[in-house]
Image (cartoon, rainbow over all chains, first blue to last red; front, side, top):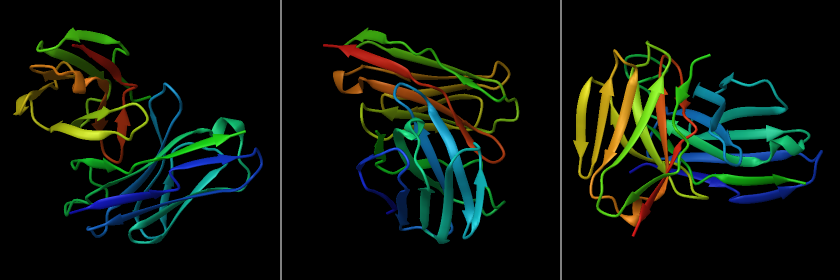
Length: 119
Length: 109
């Protein structure tokens, strides 16, 4: 069965510090991968998605970046954190349909999340 | 701007009753529809998905889709206190998934 891991589970960082969150998926190949942020009491905001190694699409211009160095590894980074970067960061994956490279039909599954507090 | 709208609630129902959660979406090209349950402090958990107009049942859960009205709903029969959570509606189009802000459900024992 498929499993998605995220770490760390919680993180407290000062403003201006760097960030690196990691996500890995087990039990599947060639997944679509996603990073979301959920601010307190708010909905899920899509930050990045990836359909393959080295292929990253950004949804929201900001001081965050993402990379996919391996098929099942997705990394979210920042060089300098802002107070507004606080939130619950969720990695998700979905099966890539054989019909196209970016499937819109398949369910999306979430990792356990990282709660980031920027002080 | 493609949107998914949900009533934020809280929706309070007594134990054993039917909870009805509703969602509307703006993009007529949307192809797939999902319901997630999110407990406080936890990540969303997929509970239902539906692609075709009509009803889809899974245990105590029924998803209903009406593409003409751009409306999707989730019914929870025999609601239990453990069903108390925020329910997120999600819609997928060509490339990505768009989530509503969620409806908070409270099942009163």
